[in-house]
Image (tube, rainbow, N blue to C red; front, side):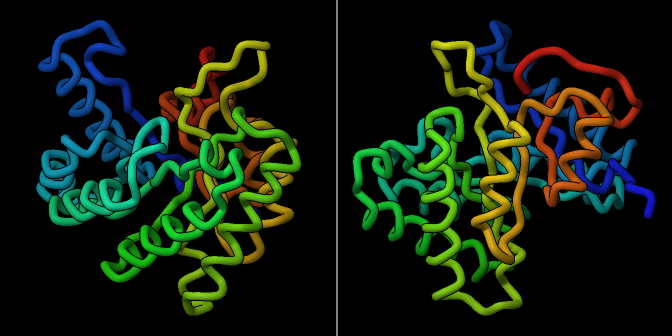
Length: 249
């Protein structure tokens, strides 16, 4: 069966003005350009910062497009309190977001505070599903070893499958990366085939998303064949057009 790559691409712009070294107005224009590109190319989703959700949703509705809007919660460190993540998520829901990509508190996980991680996965997932939103949990695989990737994926799986209906399981994703984690040893900051295979092996019926690290059409297809449902990238059009890209996301 032929893969329609556009059906798997989450086109992404998440840099702040400071991170990009540009003005707030230029940042807003970059988001506008991204949303327009998503509409024109029929990508699945425009992934943007929470402050732009309302604007993006209006653009998509006005264009009578099927593109959905996603945003990041607790980005990018994931260390915000559960209560703060829920407030941020609720604001995005009120603004019309379709999908919530939480950064799991992987620092707490590494330290062994599993109860905290279980609580935020439960509460964050519940908030999203109650409002018919898809929910993704970014585990930041570049900060984890293989055993930890397996363990945190299994934790998310176990929380979701023990508290939510089977029909909802595929609306919850394990997502590889923020794209903003800094490695010191040259290790990839985004998705790898090896990392995504580990996630796939422990995610059960949950969906999975490879964010960052997918640099061409061929690799995107391989990810999909591995079992990845979505690919997050700041170069969606280049991938769709068969061009190779550089950079981490």
